[in-house]
Length: 230
Picture 1 (tube, rainbow, N blue to C red):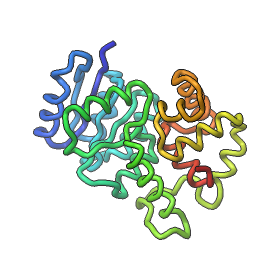
Picture 2: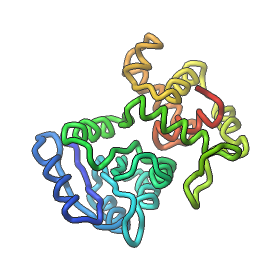
Picture 3: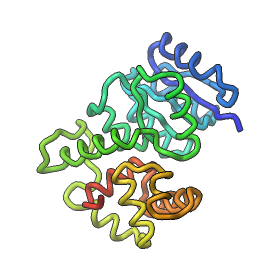
Picture 4: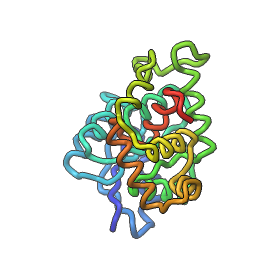
């Protein structure tokens, strides 16, 4: 099945370059572009892509707010592209529900792989980077040494994360899967560690996301880390 992609970036040259990187793959179709967040939301509503490649710093509506709207309305999964590694804007986009992020300097092969993984419901941040990301979130909590993104309240601040997990009524197996997500493990690694199939792992991930009210596995991992689950 063809993966439909919308590219949102305020630089025409970058949109063109990303389009060329994706256009050579027969399984991927670039269905539209957007130069700002408002157009990205409007085009996502009209075109219903599978994946939106989202720049963060754009005029009129930034990528964080556009991501929140697109994910909140269930229009598409969002993959954030940024020039900066783990800055506060990336934090904001992930908290808004983005499935993951890549640097704009990424190779065509890595970009295509990420698009496929997002379309399949997987996260796209490599496990070792995910652990760094989650650690950065942990230190940005109240009392930590980092600084959370401006204008966005940390998920689970003041102990709400632990309460959210407790009230979700997760099964013992779902808690094991959540802990694995908090360690930055992929579906394949979770399946091997728990001796279950990848299809079963995907089912557990889907169920726990619904119970926790999270829109992405990265959000669930952040929540788990802030609840002390790892």
